[in-house]
Amino acid sequence: MQVKMNDSTTYSIGELAREFDITTRSIRFYEDQGLLTPQRQGQTRLYTNKHRVRLKLILRGKRLGFSLSETKRLFDLYDVENSSIRQLDTILELIEEKRASLHQQLEDIKVLLVELGNLEDRCRDELTELQHASPNQEMTPE
Image 1 (cartoon, rainbow, N blue to C red):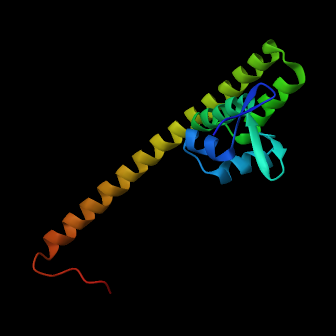
Image 2: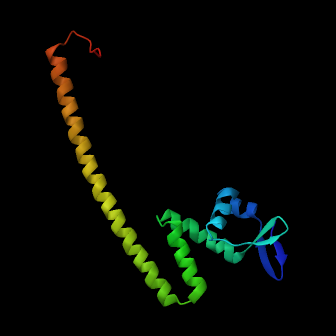
């Protein structure tokens, strides 16, 4: 249930959790990390549209492989400066770092796939040799 408070829409933690298909525990974790700071009314957390947008950005950043500390860095920059030039420079720097990291991971995966293929070939060759050497014997571990 959205609540009108001082002419701004607020959301409960449950509403945001349902909207973004995450747990309330995840949202509280983002609070603990300093990424969200909802207002409180007694024990009830009240999230504004700004919090909703930030949560959306946190989740988008996670999908793109950005760490929570990288996301927090961008939020802190925005909160302090509101300068889009510095923000965009920082985002571009993070994108470049993430792209380089992903390329390295891709190269590592390619190397591992080649190594696995080589190992598989050796195992298949050895298995074929063993099967031809003793076709009537069952393989039993010693």
